[in-house]
Image 1: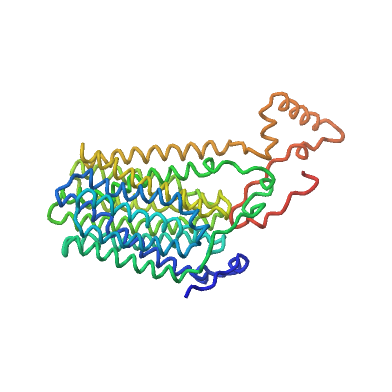
Image 2: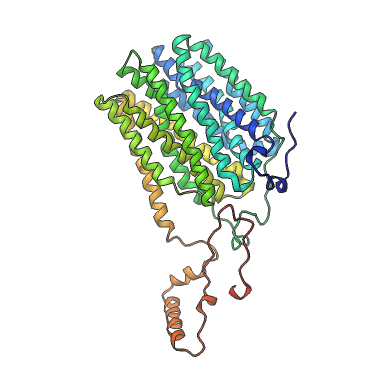
Length: 476
């Protein structure tokens, strides 16, 4: 029986995220769902190539899966508002696992692509629901830690099940992996039944997340708030699609004897790094009170890791260097995931956490799908090292965009309630201000310019939201 959901007031009184009803069940359900996903992520492309099909079809399997995932994610917030979290999560876990049995019928293109699309439907709804649900279950002051623990569940699941899927397929056959994926997804569906029956938080006017001088003005367009973190996730997930789909195949070509084992080990290290560093990123964000500190260093580390993978494959460097590459790319990707998700939660009101989760998951999954198809075509036409070189170039583009946004952000003028900065743009007003300041130094009764042109107070971090005191009346 599902536990009773707490009111927002009681949630804020919780002393630990572990005390939140349904939090542990959510982590287990998420871990099982991603376990089912991870079992088949490298196995389906490997099975397609092993059956004599092309690398393009192998990459298209992941691409179609992600395309169905993204299309479903667009509709998921509407489903959550209409039905609540439990029905959506239970149904999506079932859709993620049951179609895996369809691959037992063969590996013809219609089979590979059709059942991959069905699994993508389940995966898309589940990923949006679980990220938004975490934000509903825990106090806002621990959102970074809760998101980090969600990353631990996902990363630990991928660390375990990615190599398990490859090992089982090598020793027992691909059909056993399909059965195992369906069984693990069933565990996720059962755990979803233990989650409190919640619906997304309705909008409030004004929102408790808004700054005090934003409550009477129209909010800025959503795309202005989430474009940069979304592009950061997309640029890395495109390369991740190639790493997860083709790294075992590429390593197997370099070392046919133990290549699949080494490839599975690399994916396991990749998942472990994502798990650990995503959690650390959440702790840093909670301590600081807002996200963003580790974004640029993480993108730079991922760029170096991807270039190292390309160099190892191109110049036959020792395969143990892939361990360093996996740590660099996996850890950086985990931190960027958390930074981007927290940035979206930070910039959008609580009533739109499902929308923030949708936008983040679309950025992640669309990048993974596009990267699998695009870089798969490059791998088939050129080489695997060429595919990873292109992936590094895409990451570099995302890094440039983030740096540009960071630099411009220091000089950005807010759209509302920033009259001081607006006046400084007008030559006549600027000269008037300078004249008043000059008169202030010689007048017997100085003019208080700061009372005429008030600088907008800084936007508070999430620990201080709701506790911001209004400005003094003599300053407004």
